Amino acid sequence: MLTLKDARRVIEAAEKKAEEIGQPMNIAVVDAGAQLLAHIRMDGAWIGSIDISINKAFTARAFDISTEELARNSQPGDQFFGIHASNQDRVMIFAGGIPLKGSDGSIVGAIGVSGGSGAQDQAVAEAGAAAHTC
Amino acid sequence: MLTLKDARRVIEAAEKKAEEIGQPMNIAVVDAGAQLLAHIRMDGAWIGSIDISINKAFTARAFDISTEELARNSQPGDQFFGIHASNQDRVMIFAGGIPLKGSDGSIVGAIGVSGGSGAQDQAVAEAGAAAHTC
Amino acid sequence: MLTLKDARRVIEAAEKKAEEIGQPMNIAVVDAGAQLLAHIRMDGAWIGSIDISINKAFTARAFDISTEELARNSQPGDQFFGIHASNQDRVMIFAGGIPLKGSDGSIVGAIGVSGGSGAQDQAVAEAGAAAHTC
Amino acid sequence: MLTLKDARRVIEAAEKKAEEIGQPMNIAVVDAGAQLLAHIRMDGAWIGSIDISINKAFTARAFDISTEELARNSQPGDQFFGIHASNQDRVMIFAGGIPLKGSDGSIVGAIGVSGGSGAQDQAVAEAGAAAHTC
Image (cartoon, rainbow over the protein chains, first blue to last red):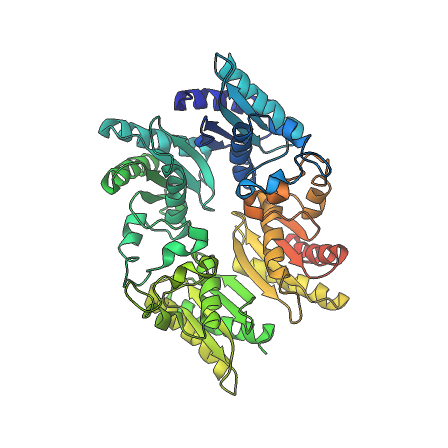
């Protein structure tokens, strides 16, 4: 079970990465029930990314997949095209959401990051996720 | 302008109070634009209070009033009855949301707390708000 | 047919009244189709009143009634109780929305005001409506 | 901080441009919190563009980017494809929304225009934005 302490450790690692690359981010962590555990908006980060960070985390746990990988299956013509309109439009299909795994490999939650390019969001989310699995 | 550092100090003070009274809470802080700056869900706090804490903070800044005071004007027959259905149902009309004031007395954001009785939510929100104005 | 020029005259009169009573307001005007023609938020007016002012105007034209009068029929036990949850929660049942009448007495739109007490909102809306019917 | 007076100057300049090109428009301005400050619908402008103009302004401030530029990153296969479904469907990914900058270069709000072709919306929004930075 993911605790608030876990979520804070994940967020702290992601935040550090965001500072390193010089791009303020919204960072969110959800638990195994895909429900929000914690969120921060770094100073200067986009207002529109509040919702996106939370919903990238939701998406990564809702389907136990990174949003980057989901994106590759959700473009027009792909097998999941249209999934972004499901779940009251909470499904985000671009990079920045990653499942968090427990020590036994089971998925216990997810991190969602939004505030920069897709590559930046993904790098920050990976830094956060790494802090959990370590 | 409210910073993430400010929001964390407010949340920390509120969290400490919640621990003292032994009731896990959701705690959220919004900025002057009523937009989310940070949120935490303490271990064991209600899932349904995620949304409520965020929206109590929204409400307190949206109308520059504590949700406890707004509640007293929003009951059946009162001058604002029905306001809870405005703003896409984001207006919370029970205790736990309090505006945060800057050193010059202007309102710079708000805290929202949800997870216990109205009195408990209010006490935790007041502890958080006090940490800002100090 | 209500024109943008008409809407501006109505808003100007309402704004003047709001200045007189010293309470910044959100003021909106809708046309005969209950669709927004113009809106202003005076400096310092509540963020949460943006939505309410627009929807008070919507309500006043949607039912061809002042929201103050509608309120008297929409409390628990009243004939219209529950109407505030209809129309995607856009129906406002407290004072501040007034239909605008053409020279032949037909209703051509409405004004909606939000930002103070019910009495203040009503006074400002009346000042705006008077500028149209004069 | 963007004032109502600022918003009116921006809208006036945009409106003048719309008249020059002979296309009635909806024009909206939001503040730094992405919250509506003022809106007008010119006589004959599309009803469906009320929402779009307001949400183009929201989008331009929410992500500190013109909606025209955002559009270039949000097509199928692009890094932000799917962003239009975030933020409760308020993200507009076609031309007509432009951030407004303060004298120090910081973004203080945004203008959103809808009512014609993408090129027309963009031209009118640029005329409005120019009136602010002058």
